Length: 164
Image (cartoon, rainbow, N blue to C red; front, side, top):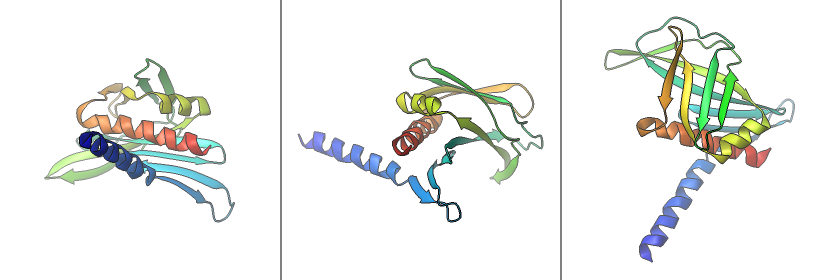
């Protein structure tokens, strides 16, 4: 019984932790409500009935190329639903170093329909295919260290859906 209570407290604290990442704000000029969620490399924003999802992808090495608008990103959900989207803006490289090793981040922005948000909130992402700055695409299976990205996408979609 004690173990059950501790497990429930832990689950509730996780939910509360994510709730702090889900925000409702008012635009000071338009007075529109803005729904936002931000956790590590996943960022949602919903304003004036347009919802965008930004996912930051890291690449080992230093890149200077731009990932062009309309490049494809594919999300596969655990329930086998496939969401294919085009990025809505050019993605520019953001270089940084860790222990003298070069890395480059690209922020890929996609717009989501209500149906996309409902799908993302209903089933975890298990696989992402995203653009390679050198051409073609790369695959990310959502397991190990990448598992948090899938969880953040699910929780963020739930946040947005609860406030639409």
